[in-house]
Image 1 (spheres, rainbow, N blue to C red):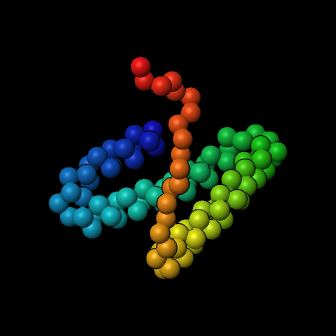
Image 2 (image 1 turned 135 degrees about the vertical axis):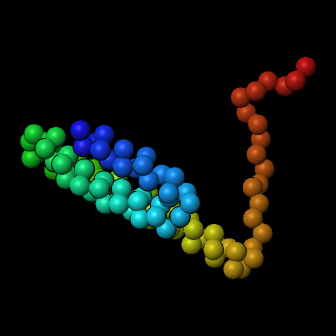
Image 3 (image 1 turned 60 degrees about the vertical axis):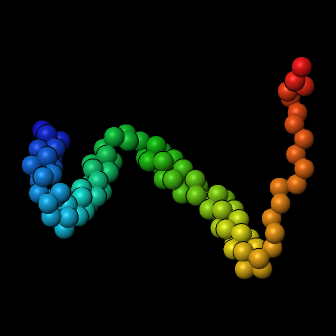
Length: 101
């Protein structure tokens, strides 16, 4: 029932949000805040504390490594751009395909 109310509320204010972008910004900000409330209600979906602990650990561990490597690559690219060094791909020989007849 709550989902129908929220959907009706959004659909009712959708034309107004196109005419007045500030109203649309407020509407979708409200939706973002309601997502936090939905996640709070979602706490009841996990029956055991072990499930909640595993979900929390997975969300914390998924960012380890990837963000650091990406930041390193971006820093190296920025340093190369500052030095104006010429980047080349080098020689790449094709493998896995037969010669054309």
